[in-house]
Image (cartoon, rainbow, N blue to C red; front, side):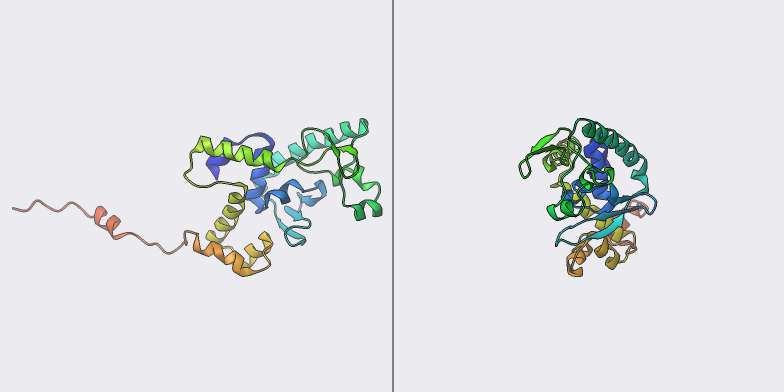
Length: 219
């Protein structure tokens, strides 16, 4: 994980840090709105995740400075869009009817907006959508080509690593289930088969043999 993060840069690196630090799916990270980040409580709220369910997960303390700096840039970008008449983000139709002004409000903007404006085919309105998943996937692929890790790496790898490393550190599996948003704990139990179980202290007999002092030459 560290090697891949070191090989990433810019906004894609920040997205991947969110995947690993909060256990998010890629689409969940890209659909985050500003109001879903709570720096004070150090939480991230995922809206309408898999199964159309909301959940709350953790926000890594280490990412806070970079994320705050990023949001300041996004806020300035949003102000520029508003000045140019393009600052209305996409909202679900029912929500937009109930809160007609919300689309222009800062708290409803995407945390990871696209670099360019585009015409929304659903409404024919020019607006700034969230970053495209392919942008992140391509960056991860390039990072892995640099690191040359002999494993299949994708955006989901970081979510898996989040779960695996939490369990390895002693986090109860039920807690990990809640953070990941798994409906069935059996889905979470899959990680028990892939972790290095801490505390077993298993040592190969070959290693024990190698640590023994050399035997004196026989006569």
